Image (cartoon, rainbow, N blue to C red; front, side, top):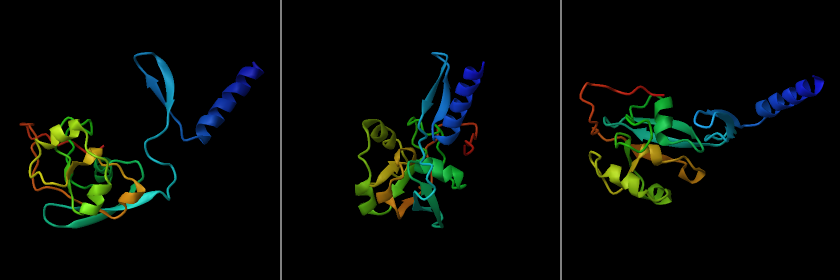
Length: 162
């Protein structure tokens, strides 16, 4: 009994002290651990400026490893993201305003390019916000949000930030 209790306490200490998160895998019916996508070190932020359709700028701090779509939702910036970042729409289309920052981004995948073909107001520096991930070299990034999106929802559904 005491060995079981000792092992349980050590497991609890391990998971409370580490940045590992447990997820329940429904298909295999077991728990698995994964590292979080966002860095736990609160000093690892970059500065990103969003420019909305009216030209108003909002500067925010984004943790390293977070997508621009998630950052926009957490900071109440109107960036739609109808597919919630699953690369199945183009409603999180953003325009990188500086060519220098655009060249520092990873090349878009074929799937992202396919979705960008559907985007409203496509430019040479267009990207999907769900695919732009914060990295230290992107500090000072400026993103413009297009005036409209092509969302095929007909009932007026507007996804809420998550």
